[in-house]
Amino acid sequence: MTATTAEPTTGSHDTSQIPAPEGSVTITVKILRFNPELDTDPHWESYDVPALPTDRVLNLLTNIKSYVDGTLSFRRSCAHGICGSDAMQINGINRLACKVLVKDLLAKKGKPTTVSVAPIKGLTTMKDLYVDMEPFFEAYRAVKPYLIAYGNEPTRERIQSAADRERFDDTTKCILCAACTSSCPVYWSDGSYFGPAAIVNAHRFIFDSRDEGSEERLDILNDAEGVWRCRTTFNCTDACPRGIQVTKAIQEVKRALMFKRV
Image (cartoon, rainbow, N blue to C red):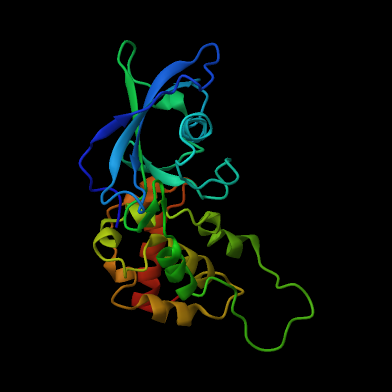
């Protein structure tokens, strides 16, 4: 089940144990909680958390887990916007929790600030804020996201010009966070769609001058669940924390299929 359809019932918690550094403000963090061992449906729970304007949403979640409720579950790793593991919906928008600053979420002076946090859509919620990523990675693996070269192994590195590298440079930035794919309405309604991230990673090799597997990938993406399912809503581009022009990459793959020219 995807934990984004529940009615907003709210529970409150004692957060007095969380340290309140000088200059902190109180943020109400509403988290969509779901424990498959206890709950039949997701539900909202609220936490009043002291936070500095320079804190990130990930800091708030870590403090809640450390000082208030150790059962809160979410993914994180590097906490620097590189690993992509902490993608979630923050105020209804797909973002990395480690990149969203509290100061960018603060309400106008005199008004309380509430931040809602929920798991990304389109993937089954395992517990609280983390989802089953296997369907996402299955689509990623299906497009053969690696260099394919035939013939004898070269005796030196495969040389590439700066211009050839620039052709696909943008799509090398993907960190597989699933923010783009889980922002796509087509993916929400049809989980068999490859999704933007898989197409981005196919693009990265389709347009690589050293690669010889472009035709194979284009044939894979010419499927009914491939690039033609894209409706060009630009949700994916807006959601990408790395600034990749995802919609543009998808259109370039479409053109390569239409004209059979890479």
